[in-house]
Amino acid sequence: MNPLAVAILLLAGVVALVDWWAVLRSNKRIEYVAKPGVLILLIGVALALDPKYSSMRAWFVAALVLSLIGDIFLMLPSDRFVPGLSAFLLAHVAYSVGFLIHSPGSPAPIITTLLVVAFSANSWRRLAAGMKAGGQSAYLPPVTAYVVVIGVMGAAALASGNLVAVAGALLFVLSDSIIGETRFVGERSWGPMAVITTYHLGQALLVLSLVR
Image 1 (cartoon, rainbow, N blue to C red):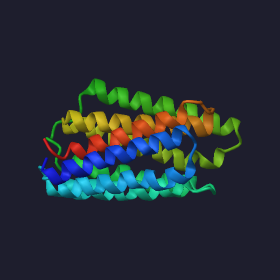
Image 2: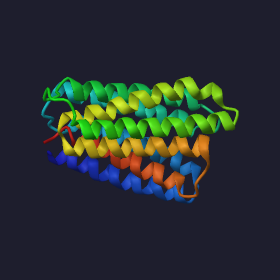
Image 3: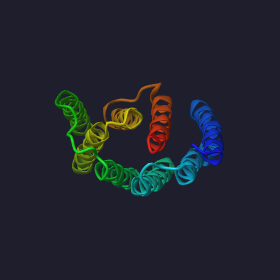
Image 4: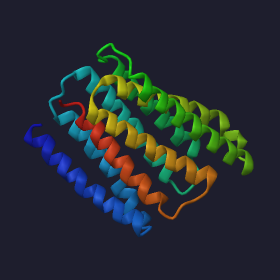
C-alpha cells in the first residue's frame, strides 16, 4: 500500500481501539463518534490505496458507505433495527457483486460452500426459534432475507480465492451472527465486545483484500 493508505489505516486502528474501550465501558458518547469514525477512515483507506481492480473498489466503497449508514441506524437510542438491517443487507449485496465480477470463474470448493450453507441454516433456525419464543415473528421475513444474502456474500468471498477476503467475510458473518443471537436468542455479557471487534477486523480485512 502507499504511505497515505497506511497512515489512514493506522489512524483507523487507533479510533477502533477507542471505540472498543467505549463499548467495554458502555460510554455511548464516545461510541457515537468513534464507531462511525472507523468506517469513515476505512472508506478513506479504500479510496487511497492502489487496488488490483478499480471496479471492485467501487463496489467495496459502496458497501462501506452502506455499512456506515447501518452503524448509525443501529446505535441510535430508538429502535432502528429494520433500517439498519436493510442497510447492511445492501452492503453485503455490494460486497458480493464486487467479489463476483472478478471471480476467477471457479466455484467455491464444495466442502467450504456446504459449511457456509450449514452455518447459515443453523443460524436461521436458532434465530427463528428465538423470534417465535419472544413474540418477534414480524422480524422473520427481513432476517431470513438477511441470512440468505450474507450466506451468498460468504460464498462469493470463498469463490474469490483471496484468503484475506475470506477471513474478512467470515469475521463479518460472525459479527452479524452474534448480533442476531444477542437480540433474538439471549444476551451475552461478552456480546458487545465480540460484535465490535469481529466487525472492525472483518471490514478492515475486506478493504485490505483489494490489494494483493
